Length: 140
Length: 140
Length: 140
Length: 140
Image 1 (cartoon, rainbow over the protein chains, first blue to last red):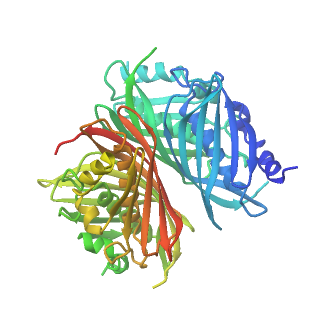
Image 2 (tube, rainbow over the protein chains, first blue to last red; image 1 turned 120 degrees about the horizontal axis):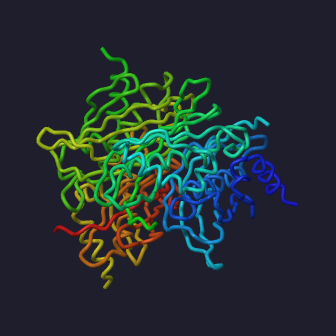
Image 3 (spheres, rainbow over the protein chains, first blue to last red; image 1 turned 90 degrees about the vertical axis):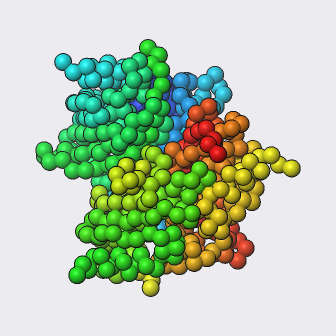
């Protein structure tokens, strides 16, 4: 049993936005996590592709939970800030965000995420994020 | 009748993500727009506040549609990238994002948005975004 | 006598990079500072304009020292990260960066800076920065 | 003879800021470049480490020239924007920035750079940048 996976899954299940949009936790190991989000009318922009807001929300949690895999016990993670580049429009059946930690310090963690558009099974890089996270006390 | 408002409203109504989350267009004039998003279980993170993904999605469209108010006829706007700082947790009844254009060129536009948390009627700055938009041909 | 101004000036004078490039402290008040940098062959890029690296270095210290005006006694400021948009090429006699604090917390401060190109006396916005600073113990 | 290397070297030699600070081009291949910058009093901040402005200037050109390796003939590259995280203070003999292209389109290129602090020969990641570049006509 993966303790890291369970820790992420417990926090993730509490995110109304993510469960509502249909995102799922795929993998969680030390410093690395992956989530996916299926295409639906809940996540589109005006031209029918995945909305940048949905892409960035998925990349944000990939960065945040990658940082959480390296957090001290009893701590949660909050986003200080992030920056995302949209590299190509995502129109596939689903997108997958892979997050990894560049550096986890005592107070802050720096993480990156890449988002892939899965169109006919072939992943294409559609966005890249770089983020700063802060460790905060868990309140639930 | 505001032509600018109608142009934004037409594009905005096509965004599955935004209508699904409950966002509304409040104002749209040359270079300046505002949107709001009510609190609901559709937009929360694991500690019950507005999810950073929802805050950034609202700020993203505020930047994008501010840029659209200054786009040539027949053009749409796509996000090249954005960066957002989360300044305080938003736990109010609604958040409001105000977007403005710093510079609109022929190809690119630079925009900023501020997001305010409305708790008991008092707006508190909860996030700030700086974004790059690109003008693209409208395909619908 | 401005204590805030002196505090900034003392720290700034120790920056080898900035004094070497010719930057000067113009103003410093609570939450707001300004610096300028004259055009010289020390600060150009390959097409003869101010180098983005020089523009961003000036904007960075404008954000950092704006945060320092609100730091607890005995603390210094270090940049966690920043993001800068280059809005137009700067080719004037000097550039001026104006920094302001959006929020100063106990650990982190969020700041913004605008850089103006002074060509024939008229200021033109040439760059905009949004930055995260962290308060650290002063070691000198 | 590397045509890519020569193309970068020719443009780089024209950068007053970079030659003045002492930066050198180390490598340039398709989509990947590296530059270094030796420690000197020209590049320090107030606590004696490499100034964030010098670190970001080096990372900026690593991103820009990585994009230039994939530019059409006769084109130059200009920074639209970049975002940099400072991961640890750099106090070594030199820093090295490695840039790579994530995507080079017709108009824009997305690049990333990592900066390593070389202290006693051992490289430590001290900064990470994500940048947007635009291809523009060469004017010299």
